[in-house]
Image (cartoon, rainbow, N blue to C red; front, side, top):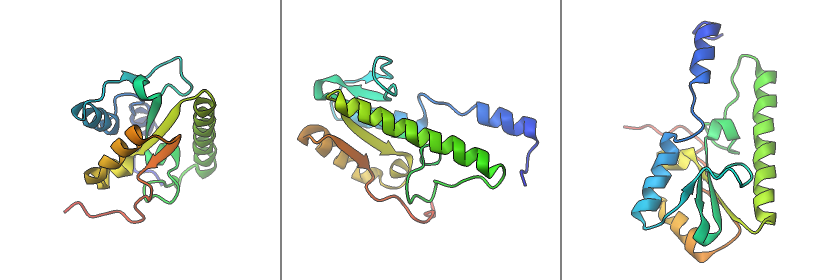
Length: 154
């Protein structure tokens, strides 16, 4: 049972941003402070990556755990109302993400996926991102193990 009216819920959902989200801004601030220069939302690349480091041939996606179904993550839930609708919608997001990553890899790009939960709970370990950027490798997801339980913020 939803606590708000259908019109209110629709307005709330339509206001969710796809670009320049808080997690994306946090990654951009970290990269800039680390001395990297980048491009944003390149439309000529599959999936319009959130951040692109052309010098390293690297596309970075900053994914929300709910919208992109971070496997095993506490935040990757399915709403109780209209469950079939949400499962289909979120499954399409995952299939589209897989397609974009495979297109980028086959085009010679490297791909880094940064999950929102990592920015909430593992910011002190963001150095792992630098290791991947400079050391190489084709694909990396950070954090490698998502939180299983909601951590208390106190």
